[in-house]
Amino acid sequence: MCERAGAVPGKDTNIGAKQARDCRSDLAIGPGDPFACLLTVVEEALGLPVIVAALPEGIAGCCWRDGDQVVLWVNGTHAAVRRRFTLAHELGHVRCGHETAVAIDTFATLAGKTTDAREIQANAFAAELLAPAAGVEAMLNGEPTLDDVVLIAARYGISAIAALYRLNTLGLSQRSEALKQEIEEGHHGAVWERLAPRAVDDVLGGLDAESLPRLSPALAGSALAAVADGAASVADAAGAASCDLAQLARGADAIGI
Image (cartoon, helix red, strand yellow):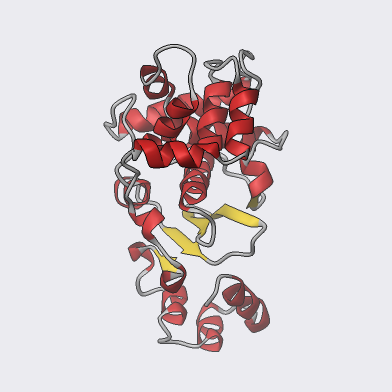
C-alpha cells in the first residue's frame, strides 16, 4: 500500500481496490464511511469465521482454506491498527478469489514488500476497504498536514503511517517524505493529544492478551474450541480429527492454546 505519489496504479492494485468498493457496496456501507466493527461485519454479515490468536511475531495472519471452508487468522499480539489491516487483507484474499494456497502473511507482505500479484491485490483491497479513497479525499482541503494524517488515521482505525501511505498511494500529498519524518520522530503523538479525535472502538481493537485465543462463535463445538476452553486435551482432539498428535500439539502451542 505504499506506491509512489502520483504513480499510475497497476493492474493488481486496481483489481483489489475495485473488489473492496464492491464489498462495501454489498454491505451497504457508504463510499466514504468507516467500519463500525470490521470483525463483526466479517463474521456476521459475510459469514467468515475469524480466529485471533497469539501467533509467532513474524506472522501477521493467514487465510486458511480446506475446500469450501475458510477461516481467517489474525495475530492478536499486534497493535489494534495492524490487526484491522491484517483482517482486511485476509478478507481480500477471499473476495479477490484467491482459491489456491496463499502463503502465511508477514508484516513485510502487508507493508507492500511483495511482488506476488495476490498479495498486491489483497493489500489494495484492505487499503480501500478500511480507508476508501472517496472518504480520504473528502477530509482534505488542500495539501495534507500532519493534523490531516492524524484525523484520517483516527476516523478509519489505521496507523498514522498507514494513513500517510494511503495519501501517497492516492497521489494526494506532495510532501510525504517530510510528513513521514515527522511521524518517525513521534510528532503525531502530540497532534493526536491536541486534537483528541474519536478513535475507532471495536471488538478487534479491544482484545487483550488474556482474551486470546479468541475463536469465532461459528467454531463453537469444534475440537479446536474444546481444546481452547479446556474441555478436551490436544490428544483428544487429535484422535477425533484423526491427525498427527505431535503436529496438532505444535499448532496449538503456536496459537497460545
